[in-house]
Image (tube, rainbow, N blue to C red; front, side, top):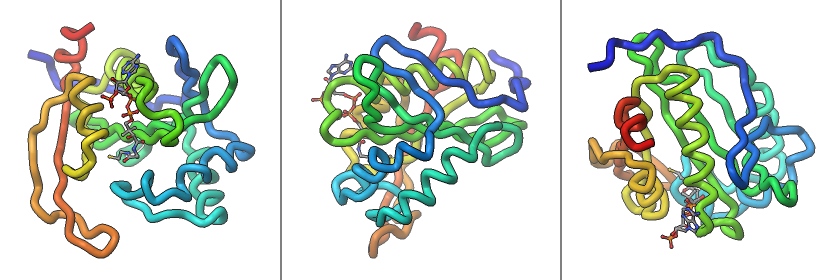
Length: 194
Ligand SMILES: CC(C)(COP(=O)(O)OP(=O)(O)OC[C@H]1O[C@@H](n2cnc3c(N)ncnc32)[C@H](O)[C@@H]1OP(=O)(O)O)[C@@H](O)C(=O)NCCC(=O)NCCS
């Protein structure tokens, strides 16, 4: 059984290279890419934000670029997902520090619809989980999703995550009460899958 982990904090943002992708820090000139999906109803449907105006996407981008250090609870990184062969920014992926004492993280993901169905989110999430478990030293990573978000649930399952909770109407979103699934994976389960 793992002891409660001592996290490698403060942790400064690092890019992550995978087979087809480079996960890198957002730049302010990524606004067109970011806004191309944040302005779409099919992408924001199950997110905790609404379809954004360009100005709102600009503010989101500024917040993402300001995230450079993981040191205290609530800190997190947002990686722009860039395709290595053509430099196209196709989505982003987040990792938040939920608890230092218990070494908990939370992951989240978004791809532009043009780039879904090709395994890019799986590849990006594996890269982030490797960093979270092997370098930052997290013990457990969870994902929180709307049960109707079948693509996100399928991604959790591809990553070896386990559904641990179904909260009923715990979140008011876009004019209705919505349910949440909690999926999670432990560091030792991650290692066993490698
Ligand atoms: C959630 C989301 C990121 C999942 O994207 P996705 O494209 O389905 O996931 P992946 O990129 O891992 O691609 C997996 C698909 O590619 C296929 N695929 C092709 N090549 C693959 C490869 N090398 N590796 C893995 N899968 C591959 C898989 O079979 C799967 O196809 P299927 O959906 O027909 O079963 C995407 O639906 C999304 O951005 N949704 C909107 C935002 C959102 O709701 N985010 C989550 C909030 S909780």
